[in-house]
Every structure is written in structure tokens, then in C-alpha cells.
Amino acid sequence: MMYTDYIGIFDSGVGGVSVLKEIVKILPQENILYFGDAKNAPYGDRTQDEIAQISLANADYLFGKGVKALVIACNTATSSAAELIREKYPDKIVLGIEPAIKPATEAHPGEDILVMATTGTLKLGKFQKHMEELRDSANLIPIPCPGLMDLVEQEDMQNPAINELLEKYIGKYRGRAKAVVLGCTHYPFVERQIREILGDVDIYNGAEGVARELMRNLDERDLRGLSPEADIIFESSDGRTETTDFYRRMLEL
Ligand code: DGL
Image 1 (cartoon, rainbow, N blue to C red):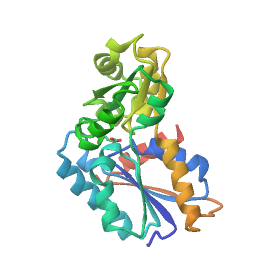
Image 2 (cartoon, protein in one colour):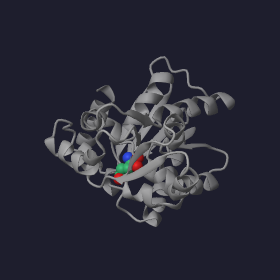
Image 3 (tube, rainbow, N blue to C red):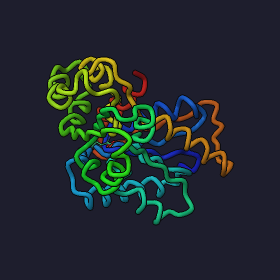
């Protein structure tokens, strides 16, 4: 089957479902093919070159199935591979998610802003450049969170190990941080726990912006889907139905 009337979305796992949720909200008539790359996860601990190759292979896979647009629902993959994918598919809609640093710094000038993301995202030149550019606007504090995506992938958001790990990474900023940028698509699933630790903070998530950008791009090319009952297909590179059932449950959560 060819998926020419579908939007392809990929992430290393369930994280991209937090982006999918926003897409479904404003584009309920779009058919979606969601690909979770569980076999190669986590991306965040890999080298930039590995992430780029894996992400390119995912894009080849989804465009090979004919999708009309691609959403890289992973900050780590976007920073390493979005440009490469756009070079390879110059005529296609290719959107990626990036940490929403700009709106956070605009709303919190001079204040402490935590940027939670994978080690891979925070290590990259692109993020470092952003930090440099915005250095005088706000105090951006990078918080690499190895292990956090792995806990989210276990589905149990009540797991005390999540609170313990978060406490270790962000506990010391309680009462000090005014805003948090969720720079990994897995982290919106633990937003409640982040708020519990930090108290009154503004949380920034780029997913809604990507969904709006997708809508704009589809409209521009007259590619909007009009399925009365949109189809959402989940696939996982580990080939297990348990994994795709998990993605579906998280969408419905
Ligand atoms: N969800 C991915 C992101 O937004 C990364 C998780 C991983 O390390 O694979 O960065």
C-alpha cells in the first residue's frame, strides 16, 4: 500500500506522540503514519553521525511509502538530520521540532530558564550557537537528562524512579528557575512531575508550533487532507505490536 495521502511522523519512540497529539487537535482530517524507531533508541546517547544516518533512513522509509509530508517529531533527530533530509528531498514538506528557546527568553528576560533535552541535542553546534546568541537576554541553563526517555518508554508515569531522576537533574533549581523548555518530545509526558518539583514555572513545548507550521505548509501546497475518519497507523522498528499498542494508548491518554 502507498500512503500518498498520509503525513509521516517519526521519533525514536513514544515521544513523537506528544507532537502527534497537537497535530491531531488542529488537523483532525489528516491520515497519519507514525514510525517509532524503538530498535535504535535512545538517540540522545548516540553520536551525531549515527543519529544523522538513522534519521535519514527513517525519512527514506517514510518517503518510500509515499507520504506527502514528513514531521521529525524528535529534537535530537531534527538537530542532527533535518538539513540533510531537506537536501535529499528538496521538493517535500519536511518539518522538525526544536527546543522553544526563543519564546521562553522573550517572556523571561534576564531570568533562569532550564533547557531540558537529550545530551545529543545539547552538545550540538546549533544549540550552542543559540545559547551564545541569547546569552544577554536570559540565563539559559542546559539540563541533559539521560535515562529520562527510557523511563517514559516504560509507560508507567507513576514510577517513582521518574521523580527521583528529575529531582537529581532539576531539584536544585526549585524556587530559582522561572521557565522550562521541554527540548525532548518525551518530556511533555512528565510535565506534571516537573511542575511538582519546580513549583510555579512556565513550560515551553514546541509541538503546537510544529503542528501550526504543518497546517500552513499543507495549505500553501493545497495538500490538506479531508478524511472524514482519519486513519492513524502506528509502526515500530522493533516489529512488536506491544510497542505500537503502547503508542496508541499514549495518544488516547
Ligand atoms: N524524543 C527525542 C527528542 O525529542 C529523543 C529521545 C531519545 O533520546 O531517543 O529529542
